[in-house]
Length: 170
Image 1: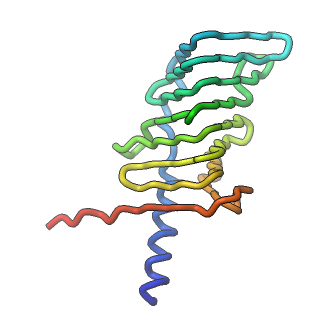
Image 2 (image 1 turned 60 degrees about the vertical axis):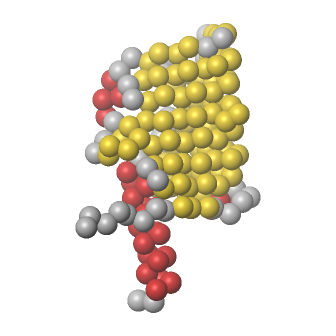
């Protein structure tokens, strides 16, 4: 294997580990959700709720900070789609089997519960430990554990990745 193909194989493995490792703590979904905002609007007829100004959403180890969060609900009040907008919106959560939390930020974040898909739009960045993954559009599907970015995610910009070397144990 050439040095270039070896480096690309290592990069592919690191991306796969980043995507596969991004499995939120199982007990987070069993925890109560707390939302704080400067203002809230609830519309039962349209099944939406809107939180405006310094929005802080916490559930277990998950925390979302945004300027505005719109939640589209199913009739049973469970979230169908969540849209967070910020300068940037920020997300962090501990992962099962990993001491490092995953962090993400983007100007817009959309989560669709049916597809278990999180889309980060505009100035999107995902950070885990010292590794950093950035593009104008990053899509992560929790069901397939697949992360796509850049043109393959219908983005316009190239993907930028920084992978820190592992520390030797000498």
